[in-house]
Image 1 (cartoon, rainbow, N blue to C red):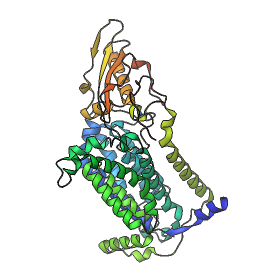
Image 2 (spheres, rainbow, N blue to C red; image 1 turned 135 degrees about the horizontal axis):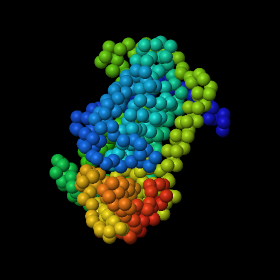
Image 3 (cartoon, rainbow, N blue to C red; image 1 turned 45 degrees about the vertical axis):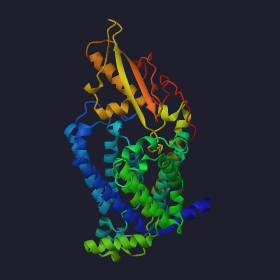
Image 4 (tube, rainbow, N blue to C red; image 1 turned 135 degrees about the vertical axis):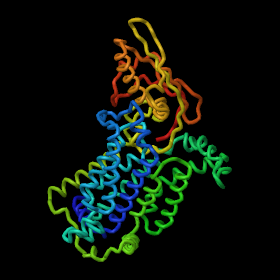
Amino acid sequence: MESTVHTYLSKKRNAAPLAVFRIFFGLLMFISILRFAMNGWIHKLYIEPSFFFSYLGFEWVRPLGDATYLIFIVCGLSALTVSVGYRYRWSIIIFFLSFTYIELMDKTTYLNHYYFVSILSFLMIFLPAQVYFSMDAYRDKTKRFELIPAWTIDSIKLLLGIVYVYAGLAKLNSDWLIEAMPLQIWLPAKYSLPLLGDLFQQVWTHYAFSWAGAIYDLTIPFLLLYRKTRPLAFVLVVIFHALTRILFPIGMFPYIMIVSALIFFDAGLHQRILDYISRLFNIQSQDFNNRRSFEFTNRWKRKTIHFTVGTFFLLQLLIPFRHLLYPGELFWTEEGFRFSWRVMLIEKAGYTDFKVVDPESGRRFYVDNTRFLTRFQEKQMSTQPDFILEYALFLEDYYQQQGITDPEIYVDSYVALNGRPSQPFIDPEADLTRFKPSLKHKNWILPFNDEIKGL
């Protein structure tokens, strides 16, 4: 076993696929940041609100007022330098830190693909993506290598495979397969789409999309791995992500996944892409073809990188299953829902009224949430228990400052999940000021009055 692992870790491959991946990844990230700024989302999401929802343990990560723009500038510029391979190691570290900081500033904006970009950029810190067709290699001949360890390319394939397969496993539930939910809610709303609008009104279409989506996620990494099915698989990748781009507001994610799928192709395709870029920018690409093989020369550095990347993937395999540690229906409680590749599986609608009680005077009143939250934040808060608790604790602090010594906060909350009738969500008798944010089960969430079978 040890010999097999050692043999694999010593295996070499052409560096072109990793270089192409670096170029497109950095470029797409730069466009993504630019798009964010040009649409005014920096101000709308991180400067305009007066309150921000935090991730547990990262309460110290906050927007910095107008200086928040600087974080985006740093993130965008580092994406560009990653793309061209200029001082790559520092560039990818700065990109990872700045992008992740942005995503941690407000939990309201959590999306699976933002999480994917964060962990992918973390992984890229340990990959020699700068040794071929980069400014670093162009400026210093001693840093040019045509061959790199095979595992550094395979690690990106593995991460993509985990994302797809786990997303497919998450779709193996009765709501998705038997009820075609939530696509039965979302697709009819696309009636105005040319050619496809009428099709989306048909129930059979909702079921076809549900089943096709699950089969696609579960099989596409394996079809991409196999040489004979790879071209067809890539066509399916393009069709699938083009459709998701048309139907849902998921930003740059479809483009990221389409470009990422290229990593499964042999070096020949990537060489042709690099040749095209060379002609476009008058670069002598042959200068990089020196048959030199990159090695992590320092033994301890090599072992540390292997250990870190191995631990990273172990966590990626385990974290999505942490919901098994919690009682209750996952789609209802959402305890262990995030960071598990459960992509677009639920449609929740709800409202939450917060009642403040002054135990000394007996006075009680309801809070106008729009005083403290944007409409987007209120919508997210109303269906997610950890948001509700964090907001309740904020209200406790606020009304203490308004002169109520020990305010009690109660909640009247109703939520509808995947087309079901609305039902009580939070125990209205629970004073939420008695609880603190933690990883423990929230026993003040009322039981889900139905059953969703599946993983």
